[in-house]
Image (cartoon, rainbow, N blue to C red):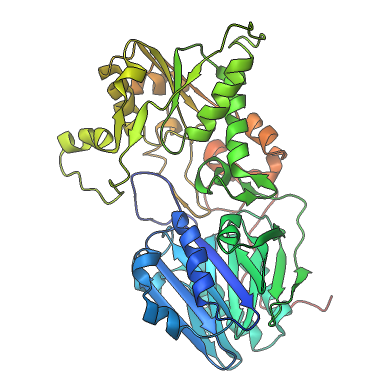
Length: 503
């Protein structure tokens, strides 16, 4: 990332940047627990995977392109000695798609060795990189993670660990959840607005930091709590606990609401909310705000399933007008009307228009008996470019649906994300310059409705100002060049390297 507006690799849908993990254990090698935790976070990144460990004497690293299962063999894990380590799965939204930007990023310097895994995007990475380069730092990648690592390494030459992290946090601006290894000490840091998730878990013989609680569950651990915005967590070297330092306090947070809508695993708990229940409750609000009486409601698998379930439950209780249903009225039937082919990945090549139009049929096959001769409501989490929705509506009508109504369990996406989600540009986003009615016509649906931003805030039990809503409002919680902000915020002056005063 440069100034928050650089080019990023384009994909067919939205993708999360990455997942991070860190463990400190008592007398057991960390490599395999890290490996299993990365498997649990594989949905957050599929371009590269890596692990860095430390055995008390030296640092060990293995980072490869590809999925977790392809990146590591038995010999690789056996060579990663040490009871402390960090891991990373990456989907690039900043930096190149090659091994130079794969993580964890490692650096050795006079004060020891450093490993760093990053989820998020910095807004001011170029400014800091230029300053560090002028001071003699040599960079091997164009990613923002290396910028954080070099800045922290420089501060560690002059300060203790806690003050060095605080100093770096005062210079970097943007979204970040970090797991860091400084020799055999493991740290977790969440940016002062808590944009990206990070949580703490207790294992039988140690502690873990992870992007999502599902990674803790995989290791039979217990979720302790979320890392607080602006907090530094230091796992003790013996695996017997952790220390907390609240380094920065902000009046408001900027939690990414799309973690709950799309990116996180449904079985994860983020900011004290179970993602699956949040999605079901968003579906219930969708019925309350824009329910339509049809014969059947079905999800777009797998992203729309929890929304559709909540929507159908709410529809069984009240009519679309909000009135209680009669005892013999079951409401709208929930049904699986679309089956997903899980072997058509995002690398599927469609060189011609005819093949692109066939893509939805390759990925989704309708169940004719659920659809033919019926009015249908189809529910998904988002409409990005509109291409898939157009093909999906046509697919259902070709299968004999009398009406197709589209409901979306989130507000319309009108602007790109600069905080770590690979999202389409404004020019590609169908909602950036079209009204809901115009989008309905473009996708040939009988009706279309999105969930309101107020409903999202209500379901997540957050004030709107405590959420990052930039992609649905066009106003961001960070100082991004050329974009509006939703709060009083400005990026730090990185030219001033005065060390912070003692607290």
